[in-house]
Amino acid sequence: MKRTITLVGVVCFLCLGAATALACGDKLLFLSRIYRHHGAAGNIVAVYARPHSLLENASAQELSKAFHENGYHLLFVSNDHDLAMALQSHAADAVVADIADTAGIVQPAAAAGILVIPVINKDDPASVASAKRFVAVVKSPAKAGKFLDALDKAFESKEAHQDHTKVQPVNSAFQSK
Image (cartoon, rainbow, N blue to C red; front, side, top):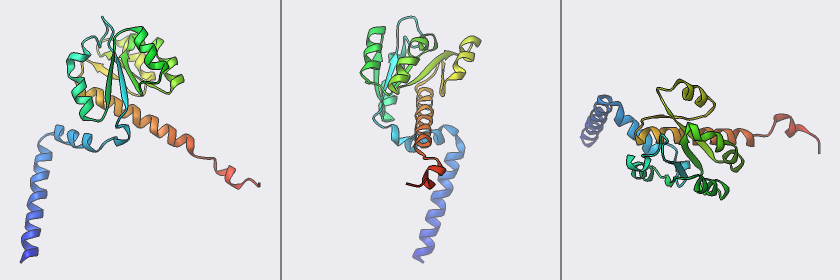
């Protein structure tokens, strides 16, 4: 009798959970955020929010709260000097910047092993075309969730690349010593 009641309870729980999950895709995205990318926890993300860029209002977008809830630490940078200091000191694991600013960021960031995620105007074909060389892109205007999606994609790509480079060639295992 106890098994039957337990089984009915489990079936009801699963059915109610499935009905809620089917009601809206946003709930599934939220559940995936709970699980996803725990390896990025504690990563510092610099947001280059210089005046007259696509990110000039980034601090007003409640990014800080959303990033903190997902385990990222946010560093707002508003001028070239502070950005250069963040890159040189390896204070950030990723930089989010306007696509117009990435030309001066990509090389120093790559040398420091820092990811660059551009923000593009989705209505500008030139910026859309130039953003194709990046692993992850944020299309402006965007809510915090889109920034988090791009960060997760970039960090996952970086981890996959690092895992791939750690693999030794098969023939090196058979070389005589």
